Picture 1 (cartoon, rainbow, N blue to C red):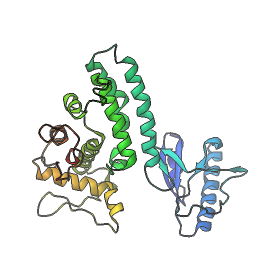
Picture 2 (cartoon, helix red, strand yellow; picture 1 turned 120 degrees about the horizontal axis):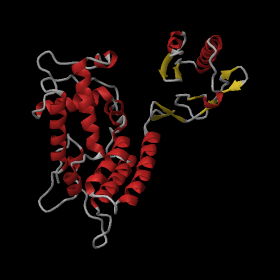
Picture 3 (spheres, rainbow, N blue to C red; picture 1 turned 60 degrees about the horizontal axis):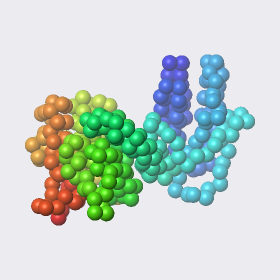
Picture 4 (cartoon, rainbow, N blue to C red; picture 1 turned 180 degrees about the vertical axis):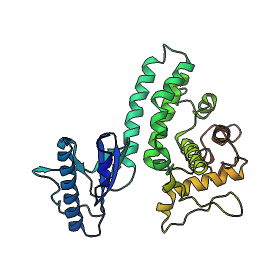
Length: 313
């Protein structure tokens, strides 16, 4: 690639993907930060000019990650091109906003799955359930599972509940249960079990466990592996400490460590099993907990979506 060595420019941390470049800067003084950013942009412009590369200024933008909402907008750009300040942008397939929460990304997932539900509904009468399930796994589940260890940590949020409602709708379409019976839709818990499909909440646990186990076993990526702390007395993971509960529950390392410890205590040790066996056991365990019901009642229970909930009624 022509731009691989652009990351050697000083003044910022760079993330490259294909022909996209992202530069990250930080400073406690906002005015100084913008001065540094303009110097970095000038260096990037000179690099591109020296290497006969063209910058697409129409796609250039920036996000100001700050707590203040009404701050004066400072100039940022290259030569006479002033960059647009945006509230959110797409970064490697996920939407990041200036508040550093995942609401915009979840809304994007909701929008995509709404479209996929329409596609499922349009072909439901023309193909068997087996094919409909494959369409679901192609058009719905990829959006639910992509980077879910980062954004799926809050199962009780309004947006996650809205996402789960859409997932239930798509499962009803697959099973041909879209009509109401006595004024109500059929409960979806038996349908999820019949299709062996995990809810969006349990997809979070599944991918946290799978990715966490892969990182620890392969010791890669190194910078993430080094954040895991394995107990010297056993193979349990020591949970990192945080100053606030919100930071703790949204942290990838904390969630992976907590989930792997839970599975370790439930006969699914991450350090002994091979990856295929580990993933198979995790999915079977999640499908089992997802299907737990009170006798004669098929409503969803807290323990169906939360591995650490003891509430089954």
